[in-house]
Length: 143
Image (cartoon, rainbow, N blue to C red):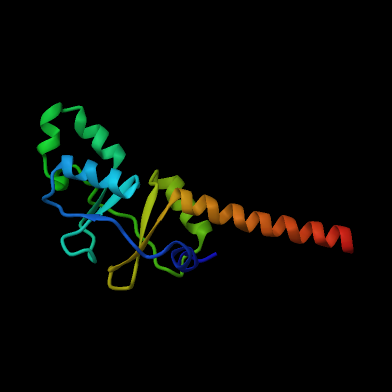
């Protein structure tokens, strides 16, 4: 299954946060959107970085002053992205190998089209496996 199919099913909304927002603002936005990561973007289309709950936890090791730090100071700057025509199997390998749980989907110019999480990938793969199982059961029972 291509990522474009996942995006079509779940929608293309990508929660973003400004690079100069505080970590406290970030935490509020993660909670508001019910997500585990936000794309860091000044304009909502280009990617400056990505910031996850994991990044917040690491920042908290520096004490309460971390709440006032800018998001840009804790974000991951090297963001793995994928084109909409990439397949779920490719993404599974990247997510496992690079230990990332969120991958923005971008157009050829690098502009945001959507975001795919590990949960989206697992759900998609389980759907594919269920379809294969049903087809095999049909074949076995009907010949």
